[in-house]
Length: 112
Image (cartoon, rainbow, N blue to C red; front, side):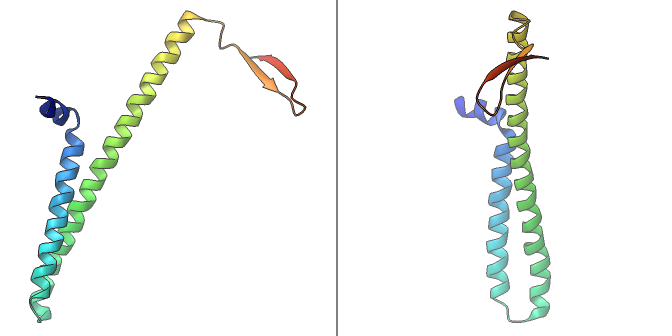
């Protein structure tokens, strides 16, 4: 049951991985079929269907994977924002003063 829960939570990564595998298989099959025929007239349709199609599927898989990573980053940022807002609500004046250090190392407080 844990695998199904993980697959539901990360469906985009699963789909990206599946599309990447399909793209690699399409590339290998296309290469094998193109290498078996010496005639350019027979190679061109194979190149267009297997080559361009596999590059499209690989690009789609990469886009989904990057989209999943960006979504994770946004979730982390939302969590940090929520924690920061909660801490600011608990200590309202804690974030109003900033400590600045000058070049000689002396610290001075600056109000926002």
